Image (cartoon, rainbow, N blue to C red):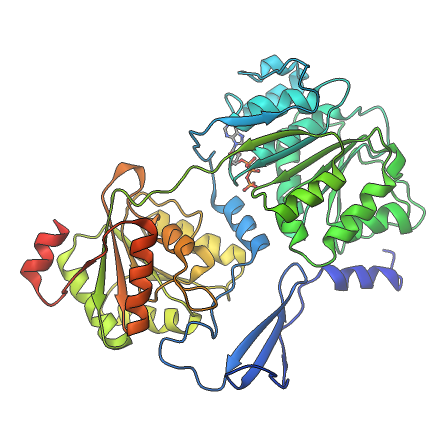
Length: 491
Ligand SMILES: Nc1ncnc2c1ncn2[C@@H]1O[C@H](COP(=O)(O)OP(=O)(O)OP(=O)(O)O)[C@@H](O)[C@H]1O
């Protein structure tokens, strides 16, 4: 195994760093305290202000951070099927005069029998919505560039995996397809899809340009497809020359939104891009499309075809929304217990703002005899996926969580969502988007759902009013001590 001064530096760059505590002067901050500086899995520095003394209900301290790369990985791990989306795919062609092709079957794509077998073997009967339009473009001759945006779970990874496998000429013993992904774990996930889909194409070789995978100096890589993180890919192309970037004919950049949110990855991606030839086909995928993503995409993908599939709107229509007036967290807990006594709850999700609160609440609920599962940002993504799986299978009826998992969990049996802490943004205003994602966990699949928010301050009441007027839906007061009234309201 080869080792020199360069490899550890890439390892360091792409490895998660331990949490570090610094005592810094907090110029301009109203609250005195310590700054907890940590690095997320992408190498982003996260600075959490940890006040010396948290006020009751303080929304700023210790909130669990939603990490885009982790969220994306978790989504991949817990999803076993396509996300349904009834919106129409929007297509903008680079050459509007060329005919627009879309396919209804995988046979229409004229794939090799081995590859077609691989696709069917994965249980894919027909292309997903985005695949119907994207696949013919990706497989077209002459090659076409593509920027595609669609929410997670719509079949993007499967689409570009198929494109790469179909693109490769196994007789050419060099790297022809290069795919970059924001993290080690995400790169492995993509590789798994390619390996599974290419199961019946044994001549196609895949390699991972990720930390820890060290090749002997001077080696010329024979793998046809390389998937990796930007730092290692750049070094494999430029420093070690394991890959000749001039021979790459298909370049895929996945999760562009996560990529540009990660320090250094945007520059590295651009540097990789500059090594490629003008004829190299470029494909870029993203779940969201803010201006910054769009500007980046335009730099990496010249003359693109553009495909967009809008996220299906979440609605609060079949969710009965309430708030409960409480004095403090103990009072909120009492109200929660009252609620339990009254509602026939299939399963419930309870949202807290901090890990500490989530732990306290889980403990209290367990003492009351409830089977409780808990999710927090302290857990690894694998641990979170396992907890969600157990909850999905009904092993626990209550899931206490921070914001780290408010998205993406589809559990049909969730009939109650409780905002034990209200969703607020950093400035203390109502976080309407988070509220919607949280309560959207109930009332799914056309069923009736209940969302109850616990309010323990004037500020909290103000937040409820803000949410009410944002969604233009009444949030009614619920008196959990008045059983009769409660039963009639929840009926
Ligand atoms: N044509 C298809 N038919 C049935 N299932 C499919 C099809 N394409 C993809 N899937 C499955 O749907 C799920 C989501 O697909 P995929 O991972 O490709 O989506 P994505 O848009 O890349 O989402 P993410 O970025 O979260 O991975 C996966 O479980 C995948 O196996």
